[in-house]
Image (cartoon, rainbow, N blue to C red; front, side, top):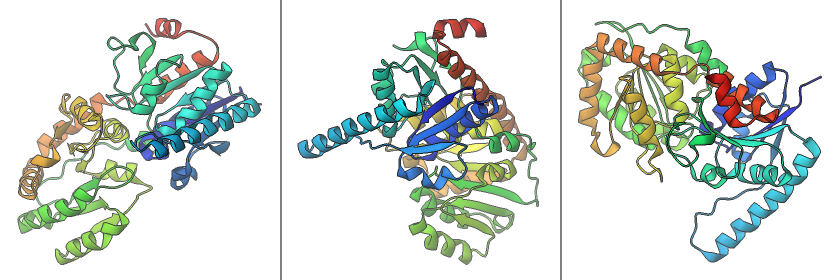
Length: 374
């Protein structure tokens, strides 16, 4: 017998699904049944998501200026809301929790219409468009970086941090071991759940500019898009180096734990996981994000001393090579960055978010929940 059903809604990318997955594990441990509403992109993660049932509901984003496309998107959204409404009537969840991405809009709006308690979790330091559309309608907002003391929704916001998966919490148990002169130096490079073409081009070139004594120490894990794999593998082969190159790694948390340095984008889940595990990072925010959310996420970790932030436009292959040289020659500095990152991490975010979900489901106000924490 379960305590009831909690419905989680998330877009189909890792950035939305990973924190939802972490909350799902916590809720299951508390005795709840968990259902997930998402889109077809989530199939690569579905095998690991601890949902009792997964539902796909139509949704769309309104990003085009073409009147016909806007009309089509609005019709898809309306259809999705009606389908979500029927789903909620059948499942009867105690609360619906959204994690961002346009697939969250139909189930959250349907929940509001049906009077089912609802809340959203915003992973980034800047609220995304889907969550902005829902923020004034839901009962509560949990934030990875959002402040409780500032902004139009501060009164109903709780800064929980970003929940991380059990694999990340397990990886956080591994202490950072600096790589000294002559020892193997493990470098992990990735660009979020969809990879980063920029790293596929720049990192192998930067490595080729290293002194032989440094390059021979490197052991590389690099995420690359499928279409970029031949290029990256060819470059690494010419350098006669050892490397694991793939479009996606299911054991990324373990690889980060073994890393001496991480080079990556700065999505909210990425920044949060690096902090919880406690590894030094070179963060290169995705430059084309509409709200510059990655730059804000990166700045939050850099302010603690746990990361160095470099804009993509300023990061030439020569500069990256110099950064790698400095990092490999200064293990104590990297150890200090690792310690600072770990101190900034919030490993209890999933537990706090689960407590918040339980409070909303029981009818408590967000003000009452905040009082219990003080």
